[in-house]
Length: 238
Image (tube, rainbow, N blue to C red; front, side, top):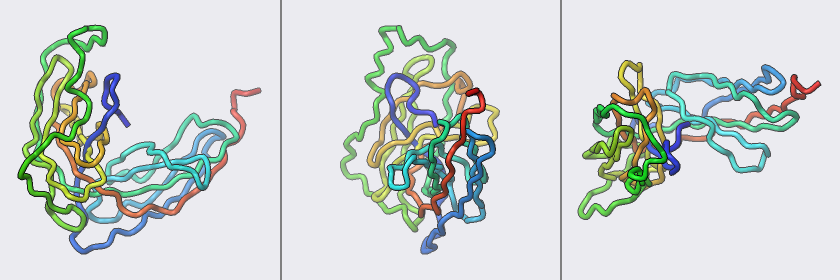
């Protein structure tokens, strides 16, 4: 998962929503230790309306789960590599849902990112909840409303873009920013943002000089069952 790609961390979006009135079903998850320090997870991907899934892990059955990755709805497996030897790992999967904004296409000027350039102070980059007087908000859970509105993408320099949009959701768990680089088959998640955020900056990757962006107001579905594996000895430790 790519966090706001500069010295500042932040987040943003993805797509689809469940049918109104249809209760999401919990995923069924299984795990397998495929090498002493790699765990492979598998689940089904047959629930309609899912925007994607989140894989999370913890090192204690009662510990706090940490997000490993946001994944597209068609993906049904994930391998967690290079794990700490002889350590317990607990996993769960959650679907997420939510409406997307219209897209914004961006072509950046030539040039590479120089983090030592004093002009690149990036005061515009941290996520913000800008005031929006008079904006009506709608629920996104179980409805077709609340999609982010009026997405704009302002080029700040050869590798920097500032995004703003209208926060029109009343019950989102957060926002996601997605990118589809030129020639890529689909959108991928860029970063994850808190609820009510409607502005964030992005320092782009080399393949994002020309790309299409969108923002999703999202909410999580029910957690899957929790699976557990304990890693073995490091195979390189002799």
